[in-house]
Length: 224
Image (cartoon, rainbow, N blue to C red):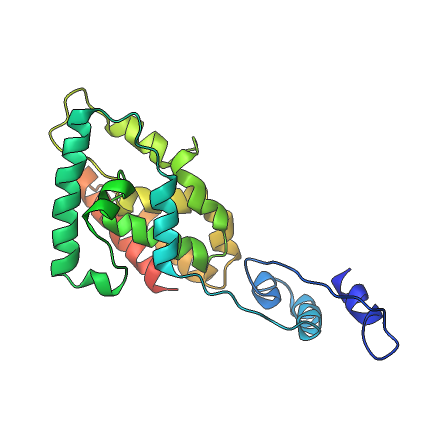
């Protein structure tokens, strides 16, 4: 249909038609897993349009998540634990020079709870790379490996510290709910390789499995 519309509006005698499409990916990226013939056809279609690329700023995405998280039900004792976590996170973030990646302060880390600082940055980055904006809505979703499910499994009656959603849980989410988007991305082969390595590793303790999924998550990010 896009091809037909583009042809009817081409040239001096074409229809006075202005058309704008909003897409997560370019036409060619959508056709990355298609046959050679289909890829050529999509290339023809893309050639009839002028690309205006929107490059999202990682800091804006992090701030969007910060405003989306609801902590209204947190008790006063819980808020103190979150504040302690946020202060430690801000110090570690600054000491490691990560403010050059995203400039975050103590209040930002407090508002981003229950996300670990690395998770808060990695989640929107990877979601943007694979073109699946839906992943920015995960804090409120009740699906496997989401924040809500993870918190339910981590919760204790009298916590001593603020437990966060870390990279292993983020890996589980993207390789489950985000699997379709990963396999449709331009780096699908790398995603499959990482998943296979993690899945085939047997006989590991829980701590070792978390470490392996963390490494897998970092490799997944590096591949983009």
